[in-house]
Length: 229
Image (tube, rainbow, N blue to C red):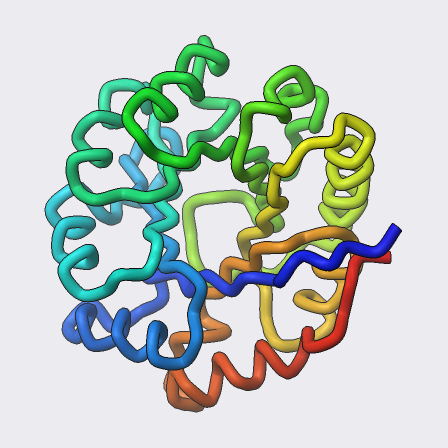
């Protein structure tokens, strides 16, 4: 059954020019981005350290687009209220980082945000099966989290397909997001055909070879007309 859902593009600020962050956000918005993806990394769940609430506040002032906040942190429950106050629209937590995932998901909802759960490449979709009816987003990591610019892991496409089948079987409205190594080539096209309806794109949007507008147009053209198989 083919999906008619509009495929969203969410540029990842991890690849943006930090010296001109506000302008980079605005350029993505002007080029037709559907949301802005913000990777929050704590140096524990993943090796890197990235953004915090103050930066999310600044990004919120730069755009009206939904903010897709990806918490790659240990103990995400301790940070949820702070990010909700920062104007976050969508909060994604990692299944591997939450001891009581059901409680965490409902905490996000109580704070008034859409909620998502991310799965690392080695994490099976069975981890979120019981929660799918309550999720706005299920994120499949197509690289191991923690660094930008990694190569797409092709085997994760099978997980996207299985997740899509489960979403359809349960009659859920959960959107499937992929994050990592997505470019304007077969990685984006195969992700959409597998069932992804949100593409996170870092270096595919923010790079020195083309403007943000050119990059967004190239990515959008690459997937134009594609539907899940």
